[in-house]
Every structure is written in C-alpha cells, then in structure tokens.
Length: 547
Image (tube, rainbow, N blue to C red; front, side):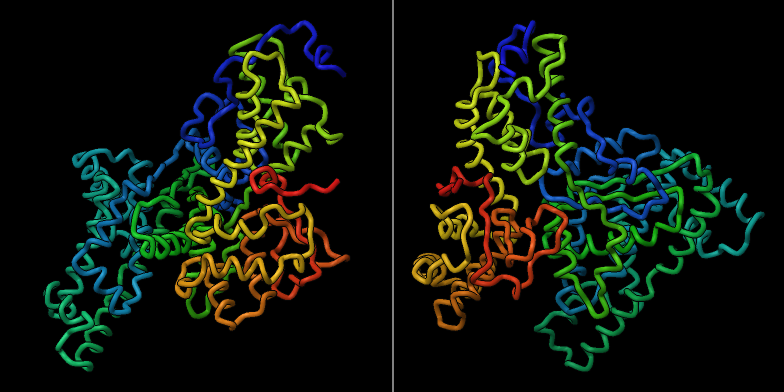
C-alpha cells in the first residue's frame, strides 16, 4: 500500500520538535500515563501474594515507569534514597571505624531498614503526622493491645521505646538508630566513642589481645541488636494491624543506582534491604517493591557474597523486565496516536501508516526493533530521531530513516558507555577491535596483530585497571595469557553489554544478553564460534554488512 493510500483523507505535516516521549520516566509526563503499556508486570507487582518484589532490568526497560504507576495506587509509601541521609553513616564518628576494623554490620543495616519500614507503615496506616496525635495513638493502641494479648511484650516494648518519635521524617530514624548503637557500644565496652575509635584503628597502641577483645565485644553488641524484638514487631504488624485483605499497602523505592551514598556502603545497604524485603513477606497485605538495574544487583551479589551465600534463594524475589515485539509495537502505536491527536488530527494514525513498509526488503517494524535491545528507550529514541529528520513532511521516508540511524547509532554507543561505566569504564577503547569488521564473523578473525595493537595502546599500565578487558590485555602483553583467553574476556564483556551475540557452534542458538538466556561459558566461546555485531552499532562502528 502506498503512503498516499495509508494516509488517505488525513492532511498533516510533521512539525518541528515532534516527539513521542522522553528517554527517562521523570521527564516523560506527557506520554507516560496515557501511553502506559501493561505487559503483565504491573499486575504481578500489585499482587501481594506474588513473590516478585525486586524489579530488575537494564537502563531504559521501564522500571521507573512501573514504579510511577504503582505510586498512583492507594496506600503507597514512596521512599527516596537521597532523603534517608544515609551518608550520615559514612560520616559517623564510629561506623567507618567499625567497617575498617572488620566488624560485620549487616545486622545493623538490616535493623535500620526494618525500623524505617515499620515506622513508615504505622505512620501511613494511622496517619501519624505530628507529635500530639502520635502520643495519643500510642496510649490508646497500647492500652487496647495489653487487654487483648500479653504475649507480644517485645513488640509492645518496641512501640513504647520508639513510638513517640514515629511522626518524624524518615531521615530522623537513621540518625536515631545510629545514635542508639553508639550509646550501646559505649555502655557495653566501657569506652567512649572517641576511645573506641582509637582502640579499633590500625595504628592503635592498646596491644593485639586487647584489640581482639574490643572487636569481639563490639561484634557481640551488633549481633545482639533488636532483631528479635523487630521480628516480633513484624508478627504484630501481620496479626494486629494489616489484617484487612481488601486494604493493601505498598512501599516503593527507586533510584537506588544513583549516588545517594558511598559505593561500598551502598552495596551493603542494598544487600540488607533485600534481606529485609524477604523478612517482610510474612505481612501478607504489605508489599515492599524496589527497582534495581541489572548490573547493580549483580554487583551486590558479587561483592557482598559471604560464606553459605546462595544466589538462587533470591531468584523468586526478582521480576526481570523483558519486552516482546507485540508489547513494543503497542507502546509505539499509543505514543504516535497521542502525538498525532494532540497536534494534528483526531483521526487515528499508527506506526505503520507514518513509516515505510520496508527497508532493504526488511519489514520496517523488524528493521526498527533489531536496532534496539528490545527496550522502550531505544525504540522511542530511534523514532524521535526519524521524526526530527522529517520535519515539514507528511510521512517518514526511507532516506530520513537512514540519516536518523547514523545519529541514533552514535547515541546508543554513548549511552551504553555511560550505562556500563562502573563495570567496563574503557569500553570505547576496545570497541576499536571490532571497528570495520563484518557484521558476522568467527572469533578466529580477531587477529593477534589487532590484540597486540590494542594492548600496546591501552593496557601498558592496566594491571590494576577496574576494567576486566584492560586487565586481561595487560596480562596478555606480559605473556601470561594466550590470544584466545583475551578474546574470551573481550567477548564476554561485549556480550554482556549487548553489542555481540554469539553462536557457540553449529548446533547452538544465537545468544543475546537482553533475551532470556544464560550467558555462554568460557568453554563455549571457541575460535570457531560465530559472533554477530548488533545492528544498533553498525553505523557508528563502520561495520561491513553482508547480505
């Protein structure tokens, strides 16, 4: 069907600045709600009986959009990490000293989260907004509970001890618990905070035996914190407070990947947060939902792993965000319809009407989606670039799409570089290894000469680089690694990022990291393995495309 037939009776031109949305949910106010596409994930998260509580996905897969939709429900508590003042821990006189002395603070971090969530739930349930109504509630509620159930003494003790401050802001509780810990440490060790800090420092002059004794005392205090008391509080919340199955309560936390606290502390706090989410499952009408970037949760598990840690025990909590072709088409159609209805005509126009049927004999929808990592942000960015290059026209032409792809490809590499900065900070350097290669090639085509040039140019001082590919190149150049061993490290990095797909052998399917498959093992990555460069980066890297 010709473009004229597709748009018969509809007279409009694409205006300057036309767009179907912004790359991030916070800026996407115009399109987010009316164009929200339910993939089944929202209902899964709203179901308190469903175990999925941790929303996991790469940048641009719609995590923040889902959190926003949940925030529109009733009885939702939104906690912003930056508002918790958790840097107070890093700046405390004693916490960094304890960490440096090897004291395990995981129980303390878990206590913090449990305390914060317990108080926020009670504040929401009973509308505890100021000191007077909080005191009134405490008095009447405790009196009622005493007459009904005397077996929950520890829970009642907790309410007595902490209840009058429930109305305070969330950050107050972080400081409150930390101060209580410092007081407990001083009481149980017989040392002031200053004396304790001096005793635990590496250059301490108190003697090894005395220092070990202090460490044991401190660890005992940490281990004996109010965990049991708070466990009873969870039972109390489940059996006495949140008993109405028709009234659900949600706590949501997003932006945990941002710089709300020191990196090392952040990983420990997120690990404690995950443990806390597990423990709150006993309250059947309450659900804590957090959003985590895939690479961040991988870092949490890798860097906080301790004896006996079993990652599979956490899998039931994770909801991996994945989009399929139908979902993405629905999303794009909704956004184009809204754009057109707001600015041009009340008649419905969909993606297929505005864009050509095919490019190079490939259906346009397939052409578009194969240039994404099957996530909304990529698809929206490509369409926006096409619209930008079609200003004043009645539709998007093949030529406009080709021009848009050049800029889009360059942008995607910039965004991938930023997305994976913490894991692969030198990505731009080793992309040079696959520049101007064929879109499909065997790994044996990465020559020793290419590896030598890369290692000499970028890895001569890379022994302690945070980037595993640079470290591998350094090891290679110092003759402690074979060329293929380096290629394995390179391939795994580019596979993880989404730039390469791999077909291990003639009997295996092609694997892509953004689809529902396990990554290839080192043994599967062979010189004879075929890799495919993702079409999203073809233009920017000058890839030779074979028909």
